[in-house]
Length: 178
Image 1 (cartoon, rainbow, N blue to C red):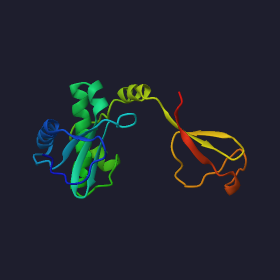
Image 2 (image 1 turned 90 degrees about the horizontal axis):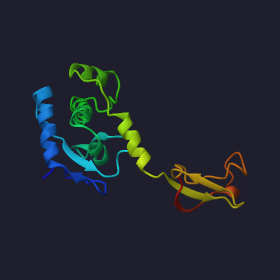
Image 3 (image 1 turned 180 degrees about the horizontal axis):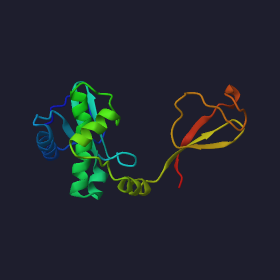
Image 4 (image 1 turned 90 degrees about the vertical axis):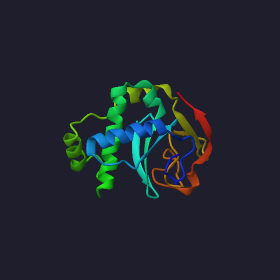
């Protein structure tokens, strides 16, 4: 049973066997116990193979199920080491170190400098159809956007170069467009 009491996004599954392996890898690298739980995500994978996060004091390593299905055992261990480096930096007081100098120094100390295999991520992205959102302006122009705009109000750039409430885009529906 995972230690985490923080809510997980839809579809995440605890991976207790993988958690034990991750803890063993961390112990071999640092000699310390790892407190992170490992989860598998069915949706992750087109841009990232894994991530580390701390939610409500609970350390979580989330790995892409699709990435794990396509890669070798060595690539899985590389990915785990990468996420464990983020975990280690967060536990030692550097939660926002990212991939900066501290991260690179730790990776050199652990004699590891590879990142997740970009070719596998490209194959996963190619398998997924791109989801597009259709927006319409009052003049009838169609705008296919890959994401919802961050701002609530967006207007048609064809009708007005700056925001104009008269040309505000309306969300029409979702369609898969190749």
